[in-house]
Structures are given as structure tokens and as C-alpha cells.
Image (cartoon, rainbow, N blue to C red):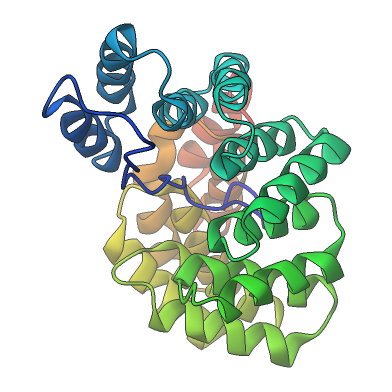
Length: 294
């Protein structure tokens, strides 16, 4: 994984509330929402802006535009949209939720928590806000309030893989391994074809010395997302440590196109142990211009 705390990209719910306005452009919002849900944020941004050019006072659409901008790495523009939304409707909770996410991404923790708390005062039963609040606490290395927030999201019905995965990470950070494993297992049970819970659980098991089960889960994660470099690295490393060097090389070689230093470093070791000095030398040479993982 890019980080033990990384999580997959979250797509904000796109069921748009009427917010007291008639739709003057029938079908445009539906197309924008469909593009957003289908992970086509640039198209969604274009369509939301087109809608707002005619309906500029829609706080809800401002927030959806902000979320799309945030997802393509434009936090300042996203924050401007949330400010505009709050100016239009100071009681629109989701505007504060997105504001909190943006500040958390910038590691401005006090501002993030203030925004989440404002959102929760307006809508204390919003599962998404509890989840993202938990993420912020976790990223700040404050694991107990993170657990409380994730558990609140679950109590409100957010029976989702990502919530259990993050809950597991927080339990693990507190060395509460039994609770962590239970949450990891639940995350896998609810994964619905997503690779990340398998990867996270596998990394946890590897740390516990449970290699065989870790390899099994990593292979499952790889089958679900063959191009994922994090999974290839973790599986290659685990196979290498288990003495399965040829298998490790086969897993790692497709990841060479990422030019990540960790892949090259690991293959230097694998090729050296396989007594393939020319291959090892090529990886050593590649280290001169490699990039560190995100």
C-alpha cells in the first residue's frame, strides 16, 4: 500500500436533494451525477459548472462540484465552492463535511475537526461525516477518537467495508490485535470485489507472522486488481521472505513500469539470491533515476 493508512478514493453520494429549486435544465444533473459516480470527475466538473451557470444559487450542486474538484487534486477550488455553498445555506451540513475533508487533506487538523463538528451539530446521524471525522482523527494519530467515530458510523448503519478497514487500522495502531483482526475480516466479508480490504488484512497478517494466509489474501487482492503496485510489492516481498524467489520475481517484474525505488531494491535482492547478476545490475542502475512511492 502507498501507506498503512491509505484508503481508496471515496466518491461522495450523488443523490441530489431538490434543495427547494426547480430544475431548469432537465437531465443535466443526472448526467453530471452519473459521470461522478463512474469516476469521470473532469466530465462531472464540466457538467456541474454548466448547470451552475444557469442556477448559481444551488448550494448542493456547489458541494458536488467541490467534491469533484477535490478528487482531481484541486483543493483550493473545492474549498471556494464549499464557502460559496455555506454563504448560500449556512445550515447545509454536507458543505461543512467537505470542508473538513479538504482541511484534513492539508493536515490542518483544528480546522478539519471544527468543520466536522459543525456538520454533526447540523446532522448528528450523518454516517459519512462520522466516517470522515474518524479518518481525520486517524491521520492525526489520535486513534481512540478515530475508533469512536468509526463505531458511531457503524451504529448508524454504515455497514461498509471501508469503515471496518479503517476501524481495523485504528485498533491495530493501539496494538489491539484481536479487535483489529475481527474488523479486517468483516471488511473482507463486505469487500464486494474491492481489492483493498484483502491487501490491508494481508499486511496485518504478515506483521503477525502468519505468512501462508497473508500470501493467500495478497493473491486474491492481485486477482481483483492486477495492476496495483502496492499489492505486487507486498506479495513479492512476502514470497521473497518465504524463499519463493522465482515466484517473487514473476510478481514484481510487471511492476517495473512504475519505476518505484522499492520495486527495484527488492528485485536487486531477489535476482542476487537467484544468482542473476546481470538482472541485479540492471536494477541497481535503475535506482539512479527511480521514484519513491507516494
